[in-house]
Length: 350
Image 1 (cartoon, one colour):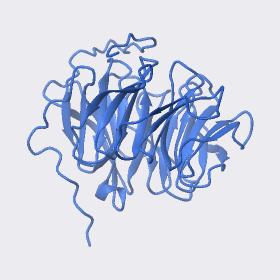
Image 2 (tube, helix red, strand yellow):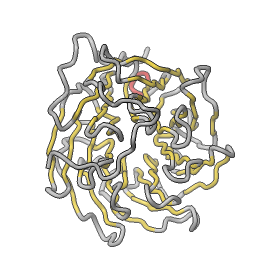
Image 3 (cartoon, one colour):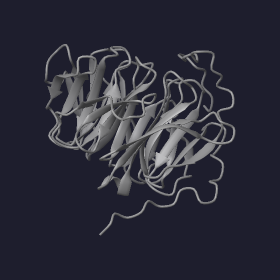
Image 4 (cartoon, helix red, strand yellow):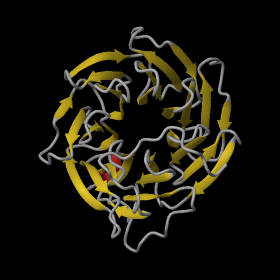
């Protein structure tokens, strides 16, 4: 159960080597909210952060090179006026990222151009909490907002193509289906999972009350077009089959507090990774129906995690303890944290 053979893997571009990617701890100035490996460069990791636990204050988008044997090297960082709650790399341009901003905008940044955002989309009426770049229709970005809506943006044209208003509470995430270019799954504080199709209209094509409490995160299985995974405040991860949406086909128990983020494994059809407010990250095997790895290396809420497309089982996590950690999650726990890294974030001024 610990190893999976890659079924789809991307080759490094430009002759880059994936050797030398080290287990590492990286300090960050603000609380970590989101992290994502580049789909183009095996050595690049982006991290979205927010000051004062995201309640007030600035945000920062970081891009790090994780291949340096001496430690992580900053490549770029952008200070924003509000928190960066989520990030997603462009699938079309190796230098560009989309960010979900606490000021209600979706901003695009180019890490090779340090002067600031290259675009800002400003139709949401409240904080944007989730953003996702379409892997197949590469001009489309989705955003999920505290204004209860999910929007789809054509970033090439700079316009909002569609606003989905089916959710009755805060929309936390809207994730594109990897093999159905116009479909996305969205989840919200109303406990609903909606499947939206741009080709059909504004109403969901499928809906289910996925949990009994708020649903904070969703992802699609990379190998099964009908399987969707959700994580909730009810502490469970649930697996759904869209061909028979009567209820979950699997409920995974093990987290002690709300599940903040789930990601399905890019090389493995039966593995899921998750991050939680219980300060842990976990690996799950859906064939076994249970957790197979538990990591409690952080000392605050773990809000971001991702798995590398290039180096199998290379996991990244980021947390409110103001650290980012990268390590091979099937070779044991991360190395001990170096002294002085990961102090609690300062409290906001009175």
